[in-house]
Length: 197
Image (cartoon, rainbow, N blue to C red; front, side):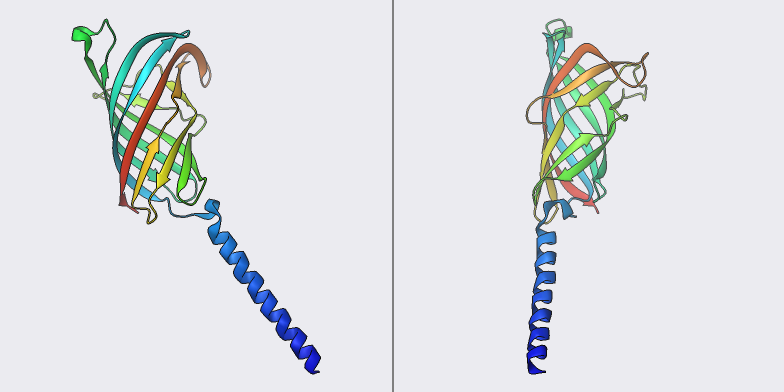
């Protein structure tokens, strides 16, 4: 009888330890992180080079501001304002200024306990409007990923496109996005603070 009780006690202890270890392992799994959630107000800068068939045409310096929203489960949305300075040789006074309202939806995943990546959702592309609300007929398909880091308490984020992100101009007369020879290579970096959970 005593032997059976000892065996049972050992079994219960081992089972309890296994449950504890499973919980600890799950909490350490970066994919289970709920750290990245809420709305972050951001600002930052970037630059782009337009290329047509591999030939560079102009450079655009950008200033960004807006909001990134993360739902805590791998989906999010972006809306922001981009102000740009066109440095092409043919621009008036060599510094034409542009402004656009831009939005898109994305998927994201945690790649480490405080690192993440975002990807544009297929079929959403980027939605661009000029300040009067007019949307051009052409749009860009964004190819690549954004890399980011979130602070330990989730209070702030940094997002960058690091290696140039490719924006390929789409032909609106074709279904979905038929890529044209026009592409823009952009590098951007923004910093955001969580303003809503």
